[in-house]
Length: 279
Image 1 (cartoon, rainbow, N blue to C red):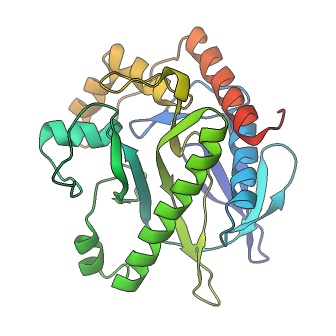
Image 2: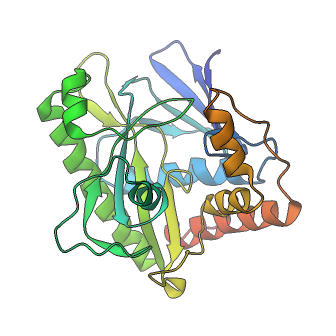
């Protein structure tokens, strides 16, 4: 097999038959920095979560099947270099951008900017796709870039919001809230048909317990937000921002064992509750 790309969390290989193999590792990243400390069972959770969602969402996708616990075989797509983010809550980078007054989607006139507040309707908030740093991009900028036609942008927007709403119903049934989610799509080389690609797990969405949800406060997460919060607390996020001004990236810190264990447990709990399956 030929290694096509070693990403932040998974490795992608060319099977030379029109398909690819995705190996989901236990690596974890935050703020576009790959951490040096693995999270046990994370790769297995992400792989099997992806299988669950692809089989449940009733939309055309790239997955063909699994091999073992952390390997997925998929169709090889021409990936669209856009992250199709849907936000249902006022949190994360959306909140940060609001506070900084930078690029924002259009909010309804009666919107009240309360931390973690549920938005009146889910919003489509795409970003560029980059190994270095993803940047927000408007629908108008997308169209003028020539990457996508207006029709394709509308398709991705409508499909992404619809998928988010369907995922939210399942999460609600399991006692969770999906605050936001990232989808990636690609074109089937022969037909040009746009299919759902990449993966769908806690690395792609922000997950909260319904029982703990409290608007106006920071939320307890069952995803890698725990890691982001710890990195902010120890000052690493500020370090990332300083290095970014010089076009550099700092070396990652070693994640403390207590946080490693908590992250692993929460990934597993989220999988088992939402899918109804034991890992």
